[in-house]
Length: 183
View 1 (cartoon, rainbow, N blue to C red):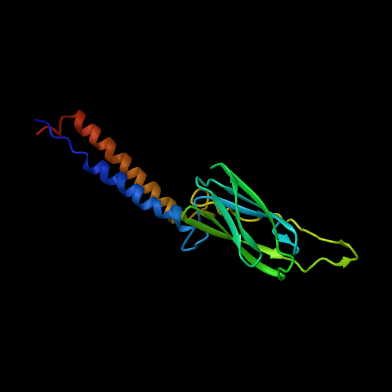
View 2: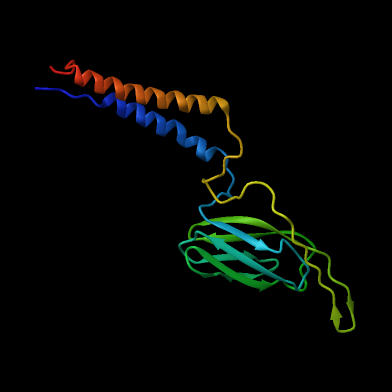
C-alpha cells in the first residue's frame, strides 16, 4: 500500500496564509474608524444653516449619518453599492469641528465636519460660503488598499515562505515519481 503525505505542503500553505494576514490588518491598528464600508460628507466645511450631503458605499444594510449637535439622524437611501442623503445643519450650530458618525449594521465610523463662522446678514439676504477641500492620503475604506508603506523584511519573509511551500511541493512530486514514497 502506498502512503502519501501532504502534511508538509499543507503546513507551509497555512504558514503563508497565517503570517501574511496580519500585514493586511496592520495599517488599521486599533482605530475604530476602519470599517468594511466607505463613507463621506460633502462639503467638509459648512456654515450654520447650510446643506450637507452624505454618501455610504458597500453597506448591505441601511446606512445612517448622525451628529446630534448639528442635525437629527439621517437615514441614507439607495442600494448596497451606494446610499446617499442630505440634511441642513442647524442654524444655531457652533463654529468648530464636529464628528459625523456613519453606521452600517453593527459597524460605525466617523468623519469630521467643520462648521464655519456664521455668514453675515444684511436685511433679508445672507451670505453662505462653503469650501471644498481636495482629499489627501489613503481612502479609509477598510482592509483593501489600506497599506500605505511596504516593509522590506515582511516582503522578504513572505517571499521566503512562498519559495519554501513551492520547494516542498516540487520535492513531494519528485519523490512520488521516483517511487520513494512507496511503503
